[in-house]
Amino acid sequence: MAHGFVKDGWNGFGILHTAAARVGGLDLGFVPGAGGLDAAAMAKAGGLDVLFNLGADEIEIAPGAFVIYQGTHGDRGAERADVILPSATYTEKSGLYVNTEGRVQWAERANFPPGDAREDWAILRALSAVLDAKLPFDSLQGLRALLYQQHPFFKELDAIAKGDVAQLEKLASGEASAEATPFVAPVTDFYMTNPIARASAVMAECSALAQMKQNVPQAAE
Image 1 (tube, one colour):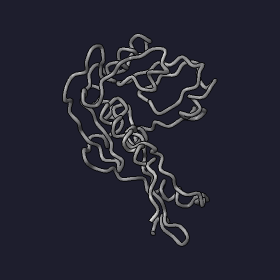
Image 2: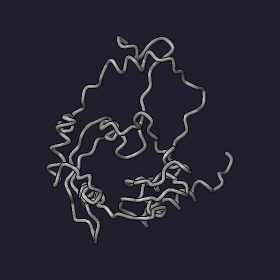
Image 3: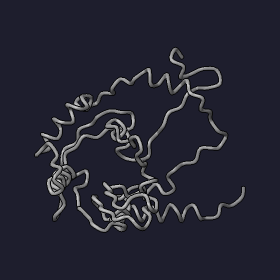
Image 4: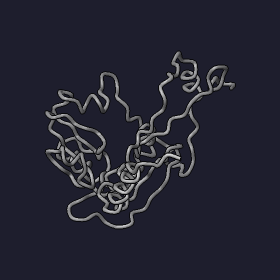
């Protein structure tokens, strides 16, 4: 209450993100800059001439743009792509992940990617050299050193970085108001929420059974 988050007529709110890596992306500042486009604007017709899609399989990209897709399971992003760069899935690479409450978590590789697939950092590093804009690292260790230098809180595993109270107070003092529109769950099919699930025969069977159960008429009591 001291900072204005909870007050008469307003009890505050929290956001539960629905996309993997959304919190980590926000921590890194992955938001449109001045004059930049958000994802919806980039994906619409006439938004861009060339679009580099880094594993975004939940976005419908309008016809027109030349699409380079870097991803794992040949999902919706690959279907729209003009060029596909196969990458390693999360079990095939070491990585840092940020959960929905902001905790940085460490994951080790369980196995190696098949065929020509490579880890994301390696693909981007090789592509940067081809484009004469070489990125300043040659290994995963070098990339992490650069990450820790620019965003030190990523070194603090299983910890939550302290937020900027001034920014939160600014948000709390705004003029925004809640509408009476009911909240609606964004997930329509629990078993088909990501590319890995959609590539699974077991998940497809679960999805079909769930839909069948929803369509069964219920007897009146």
